[in-house]
Amino acid sequence: MAIPAGIATVVVTGRYIRPDGSPLTGTVTFEPPPRLTFPDADTISAGAATVALDGDGAFLVTLIATDVPGMQPEDWTYTVTERMARAPERTYHVALPSATPAVDLADIAPADPAHGDYVLITGPAGADGEDGTQLLSASGAPTNGQGADGDFYVDTTPGDPTLYGPKAGGTWPTAGISLGRQPDRGVYVPRGWGEHWRAKRDAAAAGKAKIIFMGDSVTKGYYVSNLVTKSYPGVIRTALQTAYGDGGSGLYSVNRSAAIVGAKPEAVAAWSANGSIIATTGTWTDTDLYYGPGISSIYATAAATATFSVRGTTLKIYTLAGVNTPNAGYTYSIDGGAPVAVPDPGLSSGSTRTTTVTGLSAGNHTVVISYNGSAGARLQLIGVSAENSTGVVVDNAGRSGVRSDHYAVSGTGNTLWHGGSLNPADLVVYSLGLNDANQSVALDTWANNTYQILNTIKGAGNGATDLLILLQHRGSFASTPYSQYGARARGIAEEYGAALINLWPMGRNNYTYWSELGYWGTATNPGAAGADTVHPSDAGHQYIADQVLPLLMS
Image 1 (cartoon, rainbow, N blue to C red):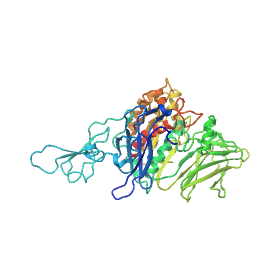
Image 2 (cartoon, rainbow, N blue to C red; image 1 turned 135 degrees about the vertical axis):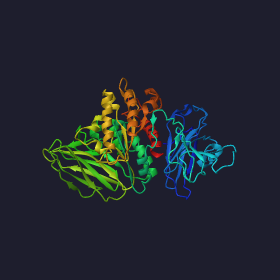
Image 3 (tube, rainbow, N blue to C red; image 1 turned 90 degrees about the vertical axis):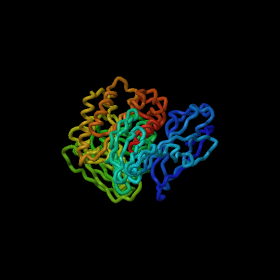
Image 4 (spheres, one colour; image 1 turned 180 degrees about the vertical axis):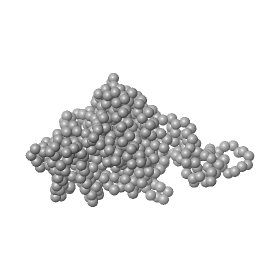
């Protein structure tokens, strides 16, 4: 959508390459003050603008000028954050006056010691001695090509300055000495966090890196305009796949179906129109059972179909068997091909069964699951996932209405499907607690469920899964134990080597603050700002993604 008439703009371009000329991949974010008001244009602007680099490492974006007459506030600058694959992150400030309607970022970004991009500090001359009299500093750990033996180096990463040295034998020490980490409000990141995720992420051009988001209706995407692209996991998926490679569409849970979203007709209509929920025929009903990836299932007892739009060369169809028997088989067809029959296995105990299809062409596919309505039986459908052989895979396993105990139900193996042995991941984002708190689940009960889930994840394989605990803004859920959860979460994070992002203190522990920013959504007009008690708008989900992405892309 174009910027309204009467608001001056500046076109910003740029290009990023490596020293050998190959293009970089990543994003550039331009963040103004939290809210800009334009009385003359009857417009309010909030949030940041993030643009992804194209195949040449270039970008073009049109932004609001920083000197629009009558705008409030006045005299501000954009905070520019460059996040590139396998390159240090950089943040700086730029002004975009309307007198220069087009500018290349290379002409205004800092690039010399005088502007703070790289600082070399040399001490006063002393007695003759060995080479190595300098204290070097820059953002990021030193490389062995920098400095001489005897030198020291300060990593000036904001909030976490670290001293390395002295250099000896042409090599810097692998570990430095912290000079006093100053974490952002609501953020805790232990030193060394992300070693497993980053290694897989950086090698995703030749392999896969996988993230699973565990959460409730906020994680699912309430109330964005498009559940696939605008939910905070969707925004994160787009950014990571742009930077490191497309691993496919990931999990498409039946939680994104009218059978489960049916109480919100306006939302169902909007999401059906843009294809971000499953297209169905016949009657499908929520089972209220918690099995498999996404812990959701819907069932049909008469003829019915469910159509999934996915992307990847390998797909998996998940169904539930052995519960509410007799169960029935089904057929599937891909891109209009001949139906393939899958018989019911005749199980007597609850189990998630998987049908795998390989060798598909790269790109998008339409998968139709059909049930013939066998007398006295039912088909119970969990979802479809699709992945490529390389790139980043992001599974959104959020389900509306769930508590922590739903992912820890005994006998279902739920956690095993969310970073455990049945569906391993390199990073699991754990975001459960809102429904626990709103239903007055005791602090110790929530914590014990969380321990059980994280134990199962870390117990898979050799424990090479990184963890991020993401606590959502509690909205207007007053008189709940949610703040107690946040305090306990810090200790849990330390125990499991997890990172922690707590949006409640980041949001000033206040509902109105986010409301003024347009971060709360509405079920009657998904994506727009509204007065929902806890579910964010498009802008709110973008804000959540903006807090998580720097950690995942650093």
